[in-house]
Each structure stands twice: as C-alpha cells, then as structure tokens.
Length: 204
Image 1 (cartoon, rainbow, N blue to C red):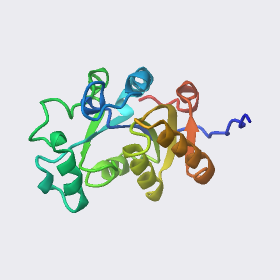
Image 2: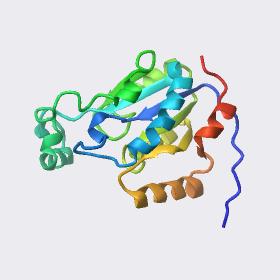
Image 3: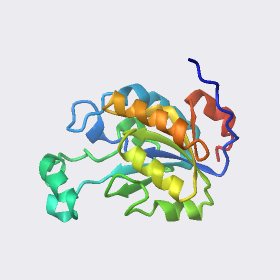
Image 4: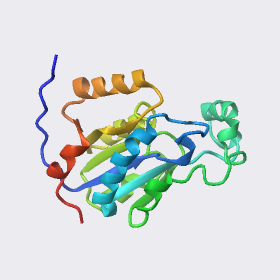
C-alpha cells in the first residue's frame, strides 16, 4: 500500500540539528554505523545550504567508566575502549566531511543520548528564537530518538529528514519511522532531503 504524502507546512525559525556524526561511528571504528557513508553526502548537502543555521552535537564519552552515574558505569565498563582514556585521538571529532562547516556551524557536546540533557542546546535555541528543529544524524534508534522525544517535550516542532538518518539496525530504524508517522503526527513530520529547500527557504 502506498501512503499519501503528508502535507508539510513551511519551515521557519529553524535550525538544522545534526546528531553525532563522529569518527567513532564511521567505518572501521568501534561503534561503526554502516549506513553513515550512504547518508553522509545528503547531510553534507543540508549543511552546505544551511551552514550558519546548523548545530552539530557530539556524544562525549567519559574519561573513565566510574566518571558517569548509575547504569552508565556498567555501560562504559563494557565499552571501556570507548572511554577517553582508551580512545585514539580524534575519535570523538566530527567526520571530516562535516567538520569543515564548523564554524560557522555550532558544535554542542553532550554526555548522554539526548542532545538536550547535560548540554547548553536548549538555551542556545531559546536565544536564537528557534521553534523548529530539522533533524539528521546518528543513530535513528538511540541518540536521534532521545533527542527527538526531548524536543517534543520541550515544545519544538520536529522535522526529521528521513533519508539523512543512519543506524546500525535496519529493524530499529524502520520501527522508529513507523512510530513517528503513526504516533507523533501532530509534533513530528518526516520529509525527504529533496523537499527541504522548498519547505525551508531561510538560509541566513
């Protein structure tokens, strides 16, 4: 069954929020996300058009597992080689294809999955008068999910560029796309990258 195209309102007072497109998730690294190379040109195209309105997030791991509270200690004990005491230099940096946009694009570091927890992101968006976040990045069913649901709770309109997300799980990605369409239609819209320039005309 072919679903009808949703009617999407024009996008304004927005930022492009690009989640965790970092070297640690690139090919050959410990949290390799196989789709990243496939979506990277699409994300780079969005960054090029909306450079000054782009905000990159970076997931910053702790120096040692015990530096994080509660169950994060268990997580980073399992993934000790992802702690900063073990990671090779540059693993938490943005991938080179996107790093070239910052500045003027902003970079926000975060300690957990959501871009809004333990970071200045909400304050930054408030200062800029942002009402809409246009979301791309990694991973669909982890950090993007946490970020999107917090954005919804904070009252932002969320526009997800569905062909500019990547995950290491096809099943997880597909499940989230279905959930967004069926459960969050009043707060979350899905668009394709090719639609974005027509919907979001402000570039300054």
